[in-house]
Image (cartoon, rainbow, N blue to C red; front, side, top):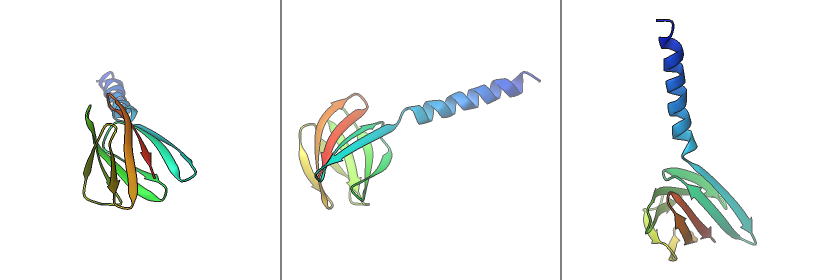
Length: 102
């Protein structure tokens, strides 16, 4: 029984690291235009004082909503107005999507 507790602790910690290690995001804004990189879907981030929720990333595009708007699918290389902002998907590589937000 003494070994069960440390083993369970290690397994729980490993699972938590796997869940948190799959998602990341970064952004850089210059002159009102923001370049955003998101790795892993199911994230909400604040960009230019709006909440951007990236709910799905596929090879073809991403599904996104802004400030609780209806979800919009934007394909690679495409632009769309979502709520109050314009979003252009610039690249997709696996689970990572890069987009510009104005």
